[in-house]
Every structure is written in C-alpha cells, then in structure tokens.
Image 1: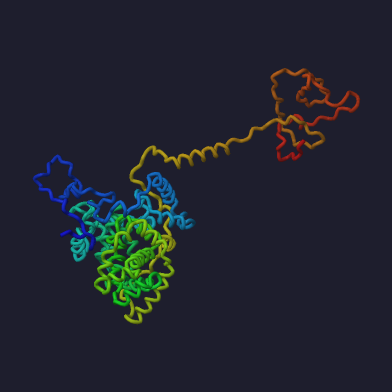
Image 2: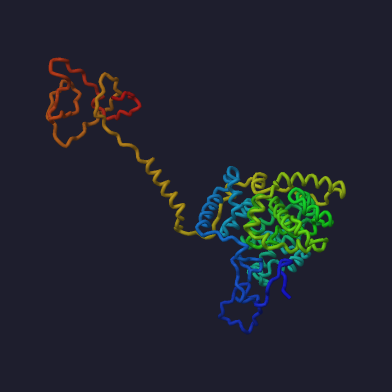
Length: 516
C-alpha cells in the first residue's frame, strides 16, 4: 500500500531502498543527509530538494521562468533590497507587483526576511538568538519537538536524515522560540513554518522570520486554545458567502464547521497542502500583503471544489464533502491557475478586518472574552515596517562572501557607462573664444591688470602707426593688407579706442548683453 505524504498524497516508495552499512565503502561519495539515512539515487531530487518529487512537483504544476527574465528580476530585486526603506515607503505597489510575479529563487530567503521585518528585528536584538540557543530549554517542550522533527517534510533532502543538519537547526529554532515566548510554548503547526524558512535561510534568520509570522501575520494562531484560528474559520465562512454562495449553502446545509477543513491550511500557511511551486508563490504574496492572501487561497479552493452543481452531485453528505476537501484536485492547485485566481478574488484587508470585528462581537456574545489576548494583526510588510520603523543601518546587507572584482551584469554595465558619459559631459567646460568683433560706444568692464597679451598669429603682421597708448589687434582686409580703420581718410576723425577692443572676453559674458 502506498505511503502518504503531507496527509493525503500518495508517495511511491518502491524504488527507495535501504543500503546496508557493509556496502558503504569508506572512500565512497556518500555524504548528504539523504544518502547517510539510507536513500540512494534511484529517485532523483527535484529542483526544490524533494526526493522523487514528493511535494507534487511536476512539469505542469510549475512555471519555468526564462533565464534572461530571471536575471533581470534579480537585478531589480537587488536594487530594491539595497534601498529597501525608500521602496517600501514610496513605491510599495511596485514591490507588491514584483512579489506577485514571484521572487527570484536566489534572493527569496533574503527578500522574505526583509518583507517580514525579521531583518530589522534581528539587528535590533543582536546576540539574542545565540543566548537562547545556548540555554537547555524546557524539557516539556524539548521532548515534544524531538518527536515532531522527523515528520517535517521527510522526503526533503535537508530533513530526511535523523540527526542531520536540517533537523538539528529545526530543533534549535523551535526550542529558541519556546524560550522567547514561554507563555505560548510550542505548537506542532509551527514546525512546518520553521522548516520552510530553514530551506531558504540560516537558523538565526529563520528564527526571527518565525517570530514575525507568529506575532505579526498570524497572532494567536499557536497559543493555547487555538481561539484565533477558530475565529478566522468563522471569518472564512462569512467571506465564502460573497465569493461562492453555492459552496456556502452546501457547507451550511451539512453543518460542516470551518475548523474541520481549514485548520491545517491556515496554521501551516498551505505549506503541507499545495505543490511546492505554488507554496513558494503563495508565500511571496503572503509575506508582502499579509493574511488576506491565506484567506484568498482558501476561498479559491472551496469555490473550485464546491462551487458548481456538478461537483455537489458527488458529495451528498458530510463524509463525502470532507473527503473531497481533503483531496483537492491538482489542476486547481497548479501555480499558473492558482495565482490568477488568487489575484481575482475581491477580498481586501479591510474586508477581513471588518468581518473580524463582526465575528469577535458574536464570539463575545456566545462564548465570552478570549482567554488569550493576542497582539493586533498586521496586514502586510508595509504596515509592519511603519509600526516599527527600522534604522537605516539595520537594513544594510552584510554579505559573507566578498569578491574582489565582481563583473557587472549587462544592464548595470550599460547604466554605469551612461552615467560616466554624463559626468564627462558635465565636467567639460566650454572654452573661451576671443571676440573678433569690437563693440563701439559701449561701456566696457574694468580691464584686468596686467592686460592679456594679443593672440599669436601664424604670419607676422605689418607694423601699424598707433595714435593711442592702447595697442590694436591686427586685422587683415580681403587682399591681406591692413585697411583703414574707417572710411576714406579725412572724412571722419578716428574715434578713441576702448580697452574692450583688447579684451578676450566672449560676447556671452553676463556683464555685456549686447550682441552685434
């Protein structure tokens, strides 16, 4: 009988076999967690790290982005991460659009940390994780965490080995959270959240990402009593009436409580339900826009599975309906289809908050006050940043790998060359051109002392008798001889020559606005 992974998905294990320790040569290349745990290469690891495509990865379930487009997106995301505060304040709609298109895999972990506010939280609490990590922890929670480690994505190469580096880091993160929030302790649904984060970032970053998700995005979800998740179940059911009245009436008719089908969806942020390509895209939007994305995904799945009369014919009772919702058809969860449907659902953060107040009043009327006072929910990365603005230095990146001369990408190289050309043009000042035309009857500016020497000519000019102490620059006529300075001799007496005629200033001088 086929084993099941993530609750309801069959996983073929016929070709997964164990290797006897006697067959492992000391010089063999076995060394990864999957190989040390007994798994061989009979099943290939997909591009996300799952052995044999255990997380429903198929070519049809994912959209491959061309390499050229991916490189362009990486350049854009690097620019945003380098000026994160400006982008979040002035151009958040552009950040949201790029999250909807999908964060490049090479920058996804860093982008998630910035979106969630974990980057600023980490810098403001330097050494806190190391302090918590060095403490032994509460034995009550440590034992429960140890039992849950092997259940988190057991067919992922990072967590497949018992006692491997993935499980060790997962234990460190979950134990540190129980010490950071002892009043909440540990909830089993936190383990897959922390595991997804660990697949993309180091343990310390994953810890602060988990803190932000538990406190800002899904507050109260993992507290004793699970009152917040029950309240959000009622909100989901109320919003379903607007999105799919047919599905709403069917669930209401058979008295199927939302907590029966949406608990794992919401508490694990669909990480154990959707194909992995869809999980990553949903998390990109979830960490940008908040819990409304989780509500939209739930509404899309309910509408697709129960939103038509043909579908309802196959589930005449409560049992059949629950079985249908436990095994959502793969075509409705494929990356391209699901993302399109999510963006078309007309549910905003304001709608979620309005329904939250309505359901909270009803809860207090029927059940009294909530036992656990959770902090207010933040709808998205921008509100989180505005509520607790980080310092500019907290957002600076600290790369661990430094290259002496990193070659620029073609896009950056073109921009760099253009900026250099503009700088050169600005730095080149226009040369001063001597004025060949004398100005008559004009008040000249005060001459500079000593006066500038006359320009040197290629041909030595003939000597001209001077009537004044101020020398005149030589001027040649059409025949090369020196013409008289005015008309025929004896008609007009020669005027006095001004120092302006000896000036080398251009006509564009601000002191002289006359142009001849």
